[in-house]
Image 1 (cartoon, one colour):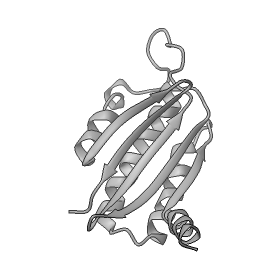
Image 2 (cartoon, helix red, strand yellow):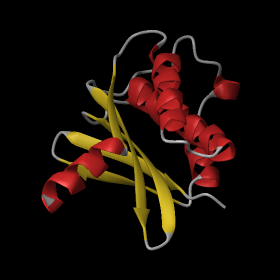
Image 3 (tube, helix red, strand yellow):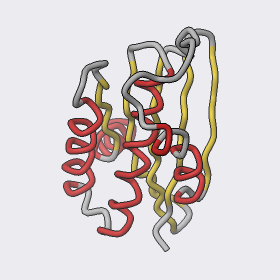
Image 4 (cartoon, one colour):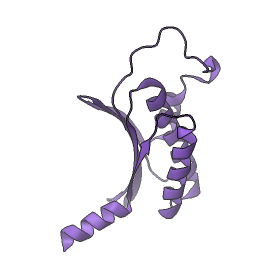
Length: 141
């Protein structure tokens, strides 16, 4: 019974969303994440930061990595503190593109990592064979 309850609680505070490699995917995934965070009653200022982190990590996966990619949100309660964990798992780096990225404004490119670092309490990258996970944790202040 205790194991079943733990599984139900974990499912209630974990959401996995595929990231399709198509135009409009970032905004669609962001909208879905917003709905999940609203269902979890996450405070609005944390939602704003989390959605920006989601956008940056998903964009990074779509621009720089091979599909498939998946967004995982988890709301971890423990030690009197709640932590929102945002992870994007992809299939690893895409082959380098020669020249600049077509259709990407160079003034708007390359800031994602800095934004994630500024908003996250903790962040990092975990690699395994054929898989890269970029993650960030946000803690309410």
